[in-house]
Amino acid sequence: MKRCVFGSLFVVLILAVVLAKVLVTKQSEITSPMSPYDINQDGKTNSLDCDIAYDIMQGARIATPSMLERCDINSDGLVDDNDVCLIFEAVLGGDQT
Image (cartoon, rainbow, N blue to C red; front, side, top):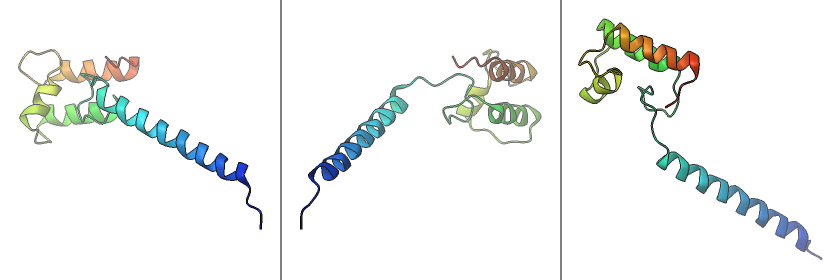
């Protein structure tokens, strides 16, 4: 019975590439800066962040102190319609900084 050496090497090479990609991806997730508009800290600025800020502004959601701080985008000490609008504009405009 002959074994295909090239097939085994190909499998090892594919596994090495996948492992390297996973390690690089995990490292970039750890070191990438968080967007100030990413209220739920899921790595994305999207409509969920708007919903959370709106709910907090309306009193429909109980927020932790750190979440209140993240929702206060303009740093005026309040989570109000100005903050929700800033998050909404970031989502529409794609501003991720």
